[in-house]
Image (cartoon, rainbow, N blue to C red; front, side, top):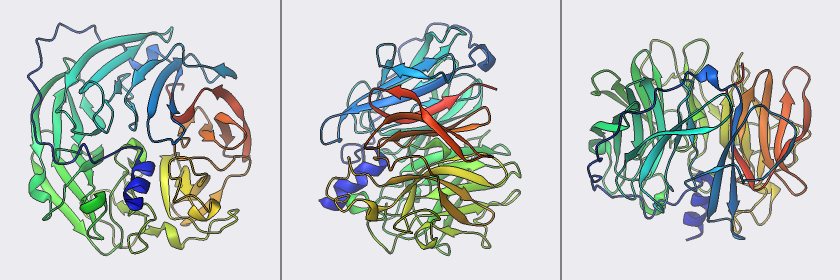
Length: 418
């Protein structure tokens, strides 16, 4: 039971209600002609989300806001829109913003698409019904009329039209499951018209059963499965954190990097790590891996962590995020939702080093936002003293903040500023 509870904490979701449901959604009602989608440049501000939890931290509400700029001040949740607990919203460079239902199945089972005008006003563009308790996790867009949605609970990827918010078809990946597991498609990225989908093969208690990095590669035009990568050589598993869209990304060299979560530090034989798929290749690069549990972290009092809770790539091989280190909180495994075990770090993918960022408190698992704003890295942090969004200047290493004080835990940040 303890392992199960801990697992929920770091993926910010509950899988008990979501796994195994194969029901199709009720048919979508006729969709009115949507308002034309504004271009992303019409809104130049920032998005952020705050989770307000109960005392135990295992349930609550999430509030998504848009503001014109990363402006210092105090922000409550009066001007927010609601979204599902335990899952991140999805913001795209086309200006579409998607809210997902509760990962654990509460609330209405639908994906809602919004846009923002230049006054940071929300404009609802449509809604897409999804199967009940299907645990929607991630969305990527191919173009204005085609996008992909992973449904962890059903083992499928729903292909849909973002413009009309109507379903096109399902890509069923259940044939890739092992006996007594759910294939659980997770975060995705598109490169060279191929969809790369991280897979979280989940067994009993929603933990990994094999130490293999698994990725499904799908033709983004035809929706056909091209390849199923199964690689045990890196010694990692759970390719991507399902609700972290940045846990799989393409760098400026067209290489794909994947943050593998492993067993969230609970089982030593299933560590977390980073692997790579090089440009022009469709297999895990045998020459590259980072075992997070074996890298001594510069500036960390307990020296080692277990896995990267969330990440955001910048440039020149530098990845920013939060590292979980259980040794920082002796009661971490007993109070998984409220423990203070997450440290802001800079990961050098070239040198394979990790450095703690000075000036930020150790945060709880809900306060681990990280994003980019102009030349800054923005960290959401919920420590003992302050809760809000801080700025980090990479060239000087200077931390300022909290720039934005908020009500709740800062767990999502996205900027449309140039």
